[in-house]
Image (tube, rainbow, N blue to C red):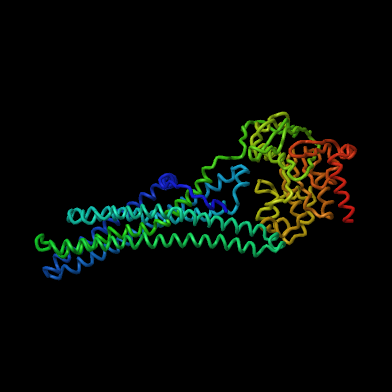
Length: 590
């Protein structure tokens, strides 16, 4: 499981200061919210004073009741004002919180687009989705509920403590002496609950990973009858999540409200015992006793509220850290020097290129070859021989450690990324289509006219099947183009590539998943696409690359054979064996 047994120490201070940077953008709204809460805390601390005055002046001495109406009206007006101020302050906090979360989510997604492929190789997609959705939502809860409650409680606590000291400092100190016990309880709770909260969040992430994996691989799961296995695995993770969630609840139930409530009752007991012993000698009034009882509520209730929210605060901080881990990652795709060099012909040369994914095992070992404009070369070899790795380093998905790659005699690192992407067209074995329309998938949201899109479709022979669709170029495309056949998806990928008018064409087993009937159309389209362009093809079907100018046979990252189709067959080496195996399989099928 992902991070199943790992719990890293989370620095609350560091995470909080990072969040403050996002809050600072909305500083004026925050200041307004704070002002409302400050005034609210003053109003709240004033209410017991009004009640004390009313008790001591009118109830005890039984003065003229004319003043009762006005005083009572003012007393209840303070409650209404407190509600209005609390609502307005909380509303402003909520606006800031959702704005901050939007910014954090956008920064995380933006940085995600720049990370290198190794990050996506190591990190399950479900885990990434959980961080940008569930974890950012936890941050929103922290801002809108917990942070506003904390600030409100801080102001109320401070105003209450100040008012209590001004009324009777000796009684106040007797109550305040209990606060270190509160701090100790919170410290113990934090130490015991942090591993539980982190484990709970980890299991939630694992649930997202398993869910995403199940959805993406549903065809294979059902085809191999693996439904029960996936259900059992999901149940195991789900049960672990429940176990840690229950442990967290037990910890909360023992350490939070019961402990705080017990301390509040102890404060009541101390207060009543003190007043019971000293009221005759000190002349303590009933109004003062009532005021202190109310202030004990206002002193301990915020602490109870904060300790109740502490578990959620931990969850939110851990979630924020997970999101900031994405925002702060700097393992970006290989850097280009952003020069003004332009690709004019598309001649390619690999010189002694070495590459490793893990820094230990060489996947490409001193690979050298060249291909000129208008030529087509192909790479063949067994699985793991390094064919796709050549494409990966050429497309700058990964950085190579040694050697040089030249385009038109210029080091590939000298070209701006935009120049490379614009002039190198990539067609994969499994074409990826975006949710949208036929038109948007061909144009790839670039500034292309309808005529340009249609011309690209006609060029690759996709126009005919598109016109047979109910809405033609406006036909909706579902996720991954699941309503289209594999051949139709591949033709759309061809059209998308040709709409860019690239000078270099990369074909990564572009016909591997195409049926024999559709393959003829695909091959005709490929022939037109390759004309006048530098083409590098990775082939599974050797029959599709027989007209290549040169075929390279790879084995464990080393070029072991090279030549035309006929030359390689005459040598009767690895290529000859591969060709005979495929030809024999075809004859057997026939």
